[in-house]
Amino acid sequence: MFVDEDKNDSEQVEEVSEIEEVPAGAEEEVESPPEQLPPPPVEEISPSKEHNWAMLSHLSILLNLFTGFLGPIAAFIIYLVYRDRSRYIAYQSLQATIFQLVVWIGVGLVIGAMWLLTLFLSIFLIGLLCIPFALLGTLLLLIVPLASLVYGVYAAVKCSRGEDFQYWLVGDWVRGTYENG
Image (cartoon, rainbow, N blue to C red; front, side):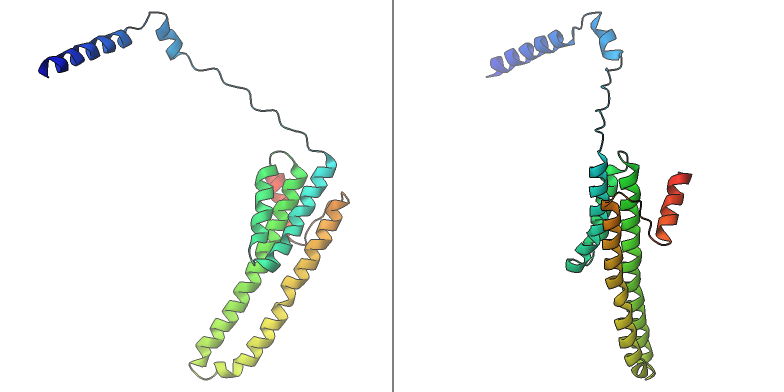
């Protein structure tokens, strides 16, 4: 058994020595940088596809009806996919993302803060008087997301026609980031 191990060790040493022998010209090949492949060709997007993707980014607001939060995520994914390929799609989808975040999350935070204040004031019995106002405020604030759905569908219709749509306040801010960036 010891003899076989010695043979195996000597065979391994020979194999290693064979591997270590590198021809003189081969060292230069290893040191030179590898050839860089050209970037893949960027596919041109037709105007009709641009309008369709911009429309879909605005229509992603309808996902909020069923999930409550997937609308901005879908619009942001469209932005990430097309930001380098189409300035029009990137602008429209980033607008849709920010608009949905502001409206849906903003209204949710305001309603939550209103009820948290009512709960805190209930400790001092003043909050019990605030409950009807909190209910009324909640009902009124729930109109805002519903109105934003209509506004998002309107934006989608404008984009499907090839028109440039700009959300109030959000559009100016997003356009400013594109012009300065």
